[in-house]
Image (cartoon, rainbow, N blue to C red; front, side, top):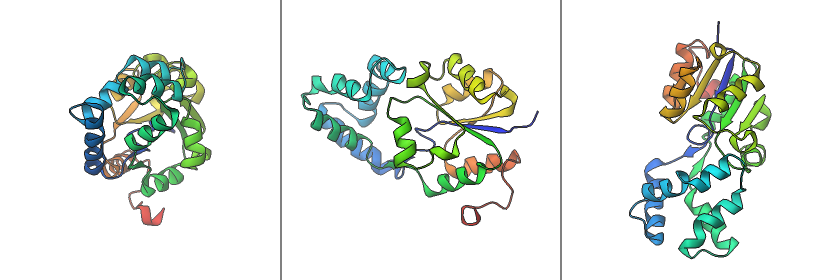
Length: 216
């Protein structure tokens, strides 16, 4: 059975640090302001927390999440919390070549999103990235109440896409998520960088060998 559906993660794939080293240097500085030793320690304290689990599975909203996480550090006002979150994610975005790839794939395959996110994902896709129209299905963990790598998230994705696992290529930057998908029979690609993704799509005959961003 051939692949006719491509399922994308967002964070770390469609949205990623545009200059990885510069972004993490900035996060290191930000972390020190809160008393963390490194940006990585700070990131895990936020995004490997019960509070984030609640936000990404629909129990609380984006603003409630950050108020809960940041108040212990003395950031008590909503404006200060918003500025902090902006700084935390500064330097992230969608590369033009990723936008070109999505636009190229859209007429030929069913495209979907399966992302662990909070209540703001749909707004970001629609208004900031302006790519929502290229996806047939957007599955936000906050809306469906299940987050990767739980099997339930993938079962819901397959149901909404009306696809069998063998028909789907799932792209995610975290090995635990692609491993979970592969165990259910989906084809997978663990995203590391854009050229490697393009190479795999060509190897699977999902993109013409001659495809480049310039001729998309």
